[in-house]
Amino acid sequence: MRCMVMVKATRDSEAGALPDARLLAEMRRYNEMLVRAGVLLDAEGLYPSAKGVRVRFSGATRTVIDGPFAETEALLAGFWLLQVKSLEEAIEWVKRCPNPHRGDTDIEIRPVLEAEAFGAAPTHERDGRAA
Image (tube, rainbow, N blue to C red):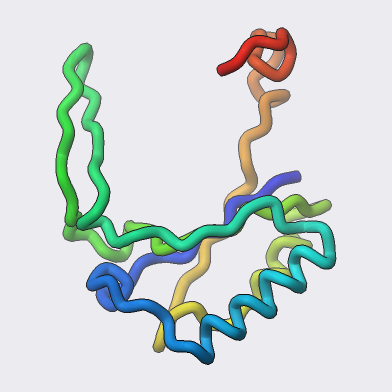
């Protein structure tokens, strides 16, 4: 199973503050451990929402909304995509992660909804076409 592991944004990350050298080294070691274990599919930090946009869908209308976005607690600062045997395994990996922010931090783990969950509908993986 694949799990998306999401690091929530903070006021500091939304202000563009980068982690200090110590935390960067700890995260590098953690990521290397995930690679050696064969569970890391991808990992990235994200720019603050001020550099992003949202596209709002309302019927056939699409509206582009420039960041920054006010609701910091709902924003992401980064993510890992892990290939694990179970949610419990993902939890154990995340518990080994250095705290990515100063102070209290929430890291959310969500299983990826795989194509099989959609039943017999053709997908790019099944019919050979690009998505």
